[in-house]
Amino acid sequence: MSWFITDRSRRGLSFDLDLYKQEATQYISFAEIDSEIDKDEAADKPDKFKYSSWNKWEESVYIYLDSIISKSGAQLSYVIRKDLDEDVEWESLDRKAQQIHTASLEGFMLNIDSEKVLTFLKEMCLDTEAETWFRNIKCGREAMKALQIHYDGPDESKRRKEEARAKLKTIYYKHEGTFTFEKIVTNLYDTFQILEKYEEPLYEQEKLRLLFNKCQNAHPEFKQEVVNCRTLCKTFASAVIHLKTVVAHVAKPKSRRNISSVSNKELNGVDISDLSRWYDSSEIKELGQSQAGRRILAKIMGDKKRHQRHKDKIDKIKSNKRRRVKSVQFTPDEESSTLSEKDRRMLAAVINGVSKASNHNASMNGRLIRTRKNDSASTESAVTFDHLGNPL
Image (tube, rainbow, N blue to C red; front, side, top):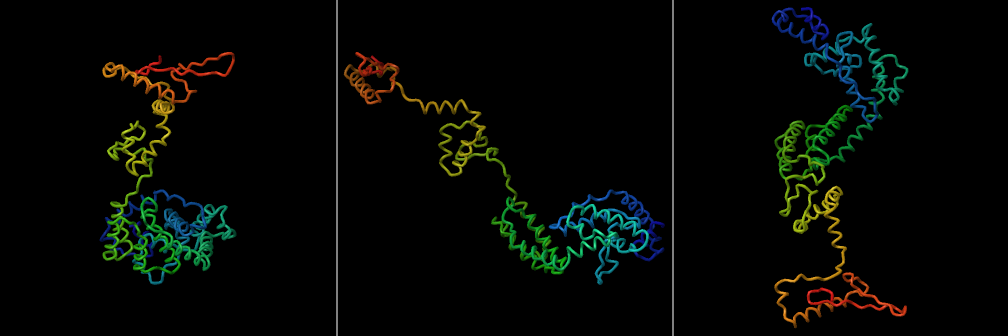
């Protein structure tokens, strides 16, 4: 019963003993749960103040102070609570909100709690422009009010609304790989919150119109679902839930990985699961038949690790290309051994004709003969060949 009375007092509610007697067991359970909640650790502290993220920073301050129980028994955020709207019904508030708005803003307990809040705000605003606005203030509640008056004042609020509207003109959802659907929704929601905070809220139909106009993903199924959404969904939240389900199926993010890591893939009948392996001439020819294949070839040829792996083979191919033919030599076979004397002479003549037509300075099998007579200019005598290409 002690917990029941204390709880009702902290929430600004009357004591109804009949109510307690009807649900005594339940209230005892509530008391046990409440004692465990008091032992919970506080939320993480927000980041230091940043001018560009004032709205989110202010919200994070309330969240952090909500997680700390004050000396008065209410959440410490009661020190910087905002006034309730006049049309709000007390019974419609949850237990936490009732406790926050019931705690007294006067007296000894407030002084202790206010000092804690002031110390916290000084820590969060140290060495930032924000500390200027409450430097000489000794009360946590007044310090927070000073920040709100400045950063939510007429000039600042006008600028923030203009920035929010300008941002709406630049964001679009075209693909998960560029700007995800989640980011689009978050940006829209943040914009709606800013406009609502500064008393220019958007109607639900306007929110839906903006959402659908921003959805420019060209996937046929997604486009069709956007059309369906225009008819089926009446709220921004329901439309987001519906489209998120569609995105999960048709607009999955593509992995930004090197094409050489692609596995279990075939192109033009060629296995390209491992681009670092050796590709023979027939496979290279097949890949060169299409634009996609040529892109793969570019990757293969530009892979330095692959070059190192197959260095011996590549060097051998390059060496063969650079090598000049130094001799033409035939291996006798059955057909050549049966040639007539006339055919042999004719074949030998052809071989010698080819030899003479070549560069006289080239070395032909190391058998080029040079002679000098009386230190005069050198003369050259080319070697002649038989019908098998053997030098005579």
